[in-house]
Structures are given as structure tokens and as C-alpha cells.
Length: 205
Image (cartoon, rainbow, N blue to C red; front, side, top):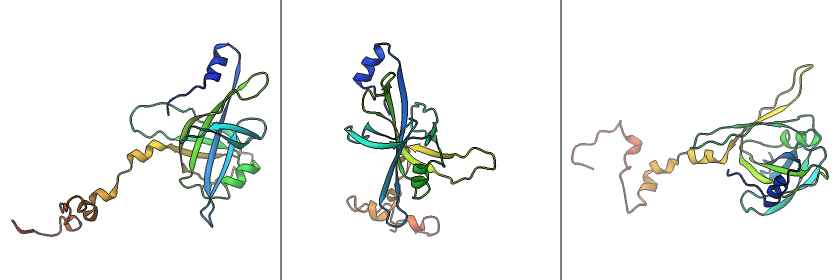
């Protein structure tokens, strides 16, 4: 994901004034019964707040409600790498937060789309300087439901893989005779299902 800095944020930064950085996560889970999408947002701010963020697909600013109260505990440092190697990211949420428990424990999170945003606030007024920009998009790869031991600290750690993972997934149809034959009657793969176990006499098809 290329780094983007809003002009207002850049101008404020050049003024030398201090800024406050906040991180936001938006999850789209699924209802177990109906399969309908169920969304929820969490951030490392102090209060629940309606924030403006840039939509990762359209680039337009949209308003969303993000839950605070310690719901988002930590987001692992996001590195920038070249190539198609997959580098998962771990996000830690609080299981005792009501909003977290309602969404992440009550709905299906397998492969759930995730959006991570970064937002900057004026140090004195605590007002956002610009819509939060997209930091990373991906899907939840692991979402274990664990219970802390007696005297331990309760936390939910989710592993997120970036959208670039889709570029590493092969297409099984390229080895299908049905699909291959649609290319001008190409029957190169007609015997692929029996390759290695069927003997074809020389000069016969």
C-alpha cells in the first residue's frame, strides 16, 4: 500500500506543531445464520467517535463509528517489502470490551475483510486534521478464541494477511480440459485425468 499523506496533514506537519496519531481497524464479519455482512470499527482513542476515513476502493471519504474504551490494544508494526511474499500482521483487541465481544465473538470471522487506517489529530484540540488514510487492507487468517489464565491478561490476537495474497493463489481451471477446449477447440488436456495410468499407443489419439 503506497504511503499517502493528506495535504492538510503535510502542511500541519511542516508547521512544526505536535500531532497525535491514532490507528483504526474496520472488520466485516458474517452472520452465521444468514451470511449477511456485519461491520464494526475499533480504534485506540479514548472515546467512541464517528470518524471520516478514505474508502480503500473508491478513495471517497466515508463516516464510520469506531469504538474505543481500550477495544484496540495493539497493531503490530507494518513493514514495507518488495515482491509477493506474504507478511502477516497481528492485531490485538480486548475481549472484555462490549463492542469487541459482540462482533468478534458473535459472528463468523473466517476470511473476513479488514481495513486498517491511520488518522492524525491536532494536539491541542484533539480534532482530526483530515480523513484517515488507508494503511492496509486484507483478510483475517487466524482468529482463535482464547480465555486468559487466572491472573493473566485477557486479549484477542488476530492474524491478518494483506490483499496481495490473492496474487499467489493459482487458478485450478487452467488444468481443466473443459476450459482449455474453449480456446479454439484445444484438447491438449483431454487425457489429464488419466495421465500416468493410461497407455496411449503411438500415433493414436
